[in-house]
Image (cartoon, rainbow, N blue to C red; front, top):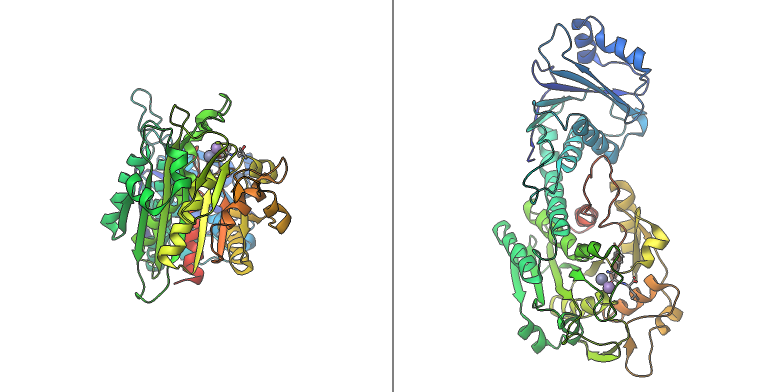
Length: 493
Ligand code: BES
Ligand code: MN
Ligand code: ZN
């Protein structure tokens, strides 16, 4: 792992693996055409034999092509150049790296053909981003049989060298932030305890992020009975992490991001069935995305004031665990009857949201949480569920999600759903009825927003167990970092 990516002027290399992009129609661009000539027409001949037309994702490899000193020439189809967008360029970069992932020679990408709506620089930078994300593997615990190390050097040949470097400097921050999130989600819960998570968040200090960690005693003083109730059955002390990136004038109100950080969710006394429970090591995917986002914002020095708050707990059964029927008092003063200890994420977020709006008076709050199984039933793994009291934020996130390949789908909230969490015994209960489980969870959260513009992203389907794509081969996608970084970039800097 750890791929060094650089850019160079458009020229044909003489060593290693060369990857050529060919648009639909199968026409070779000038440098590729010249190379084809050198090889005595080997490339165009192979295209014919393979019936290669340049369809998106189609590819073939020529090994040790004659009359050259190259190891291989890989030809990859781009599809219709008129339809090429940012995510297509990233997919291309991912596919390109995938084609040589078992080799160790330096790789050069030659990006000559038409780039559709993209500039050559953006195409090159996006391809680099795709390659970087594709390269990610989680193998720190494999000591015997690691997969092939893959190429260590990727050079991208582009006609817009300076602009490509500049564009990539920014996109690289997003990719690095995504990788931070992936690593956190992939880590097992015996390693990534709340305290260890807080320790890792602390390392953002080196990027200029101010990081505070609140202990259980401090949270108790603040009245966070809702969050603390979830963690009380675990030997691992709960933690709250507060990160601040100050990239704008002091007078500017911050934007705030809040992450569910359940380092492991057994369900507590309302214990989960054994099958698939191991996935609940990823129940801190929201907190991971917020950490990755703060990493991205700080490393690209975003001109924004941003706050990241993580509620870190472990939800365990045990002699001190919270019981079904317990009534807890949240920091807001509202009381909650805990009817199912497995609906713990909302209990953690209740105090994290209240604390955030009270302390920081943010322009808006966006929380991310692997909150409900129901959202996976509704939206699968393609869309995160979006719940909000703000049409403006919802529209912005929907548009950016579509453009960047981290999609959201707005889900309903209403008075009737809100009533479903009323209970005779306290101000509210932590579960609704049988139906609309993701919406009643969102209504619960809304009661702790104090009417601040707010979005809740239910990322249970998108953060983990992720399908393999051209730019992600790992269990944890790192969903959310890119979406929120681009939101900040487009509207809040
Ligand atoms: N962390 C889970 C939700 C989840 C399930 C995330 C599967 C990712 C994959 C959450 O804490 C939970 O247990 N939710 C319950 C809520 C129910 C008890 C009201 C659920 O969705 O079943
Ligand atoms: Mn749960
Ligand atoms: Zn959970």
